[in-house]
Image (cartoon, rainbow, N blue to C red; front, side, top):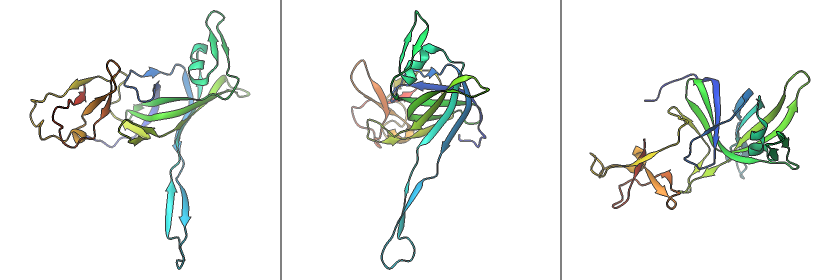
Length: 220
């Protein structure tokens, strides 16, 4: 049941491939000055003859951004997000020679309040930063992008009060369970498989009635 919660204190930042059901990876290091924000939508007034005020106003949404400095990091993780190469034997990171971006699903977990906030697809860029009296860190900006699933439905972000770092697993819905035939699969949160064996992925079904012969799945 939904509850009113005040959400404070970031705990951990996780990432994984966009559109994946795999277990999330923890971002190693410390997050300094973590900030999450979205600017107000831009508005464009549509004028019309014989009207003293705008006939209509069109709003364009702005992306959500996560910004922070990554401190206390290891060199071997830098190529994953910022490009370049890492030489294990020499323990040496060679930075990218051109601007480098990556795309990941990102989730920030909180210590209190709502459990987690996530971006389905975040464009990620980082640059070296050293303030006069500060540590040598990486300034990281993650910018939300629309993620379109296999049902051609767009997604931007989510807030998840049951977030878990574990890999998502699914089990088939038993056709003999009570109320199965009359259920609305989309409304009750059932999933369907897509892809080919063994690389199945699961997506929320948009079926509003049970389709005969089709197998539905639910998270466990």
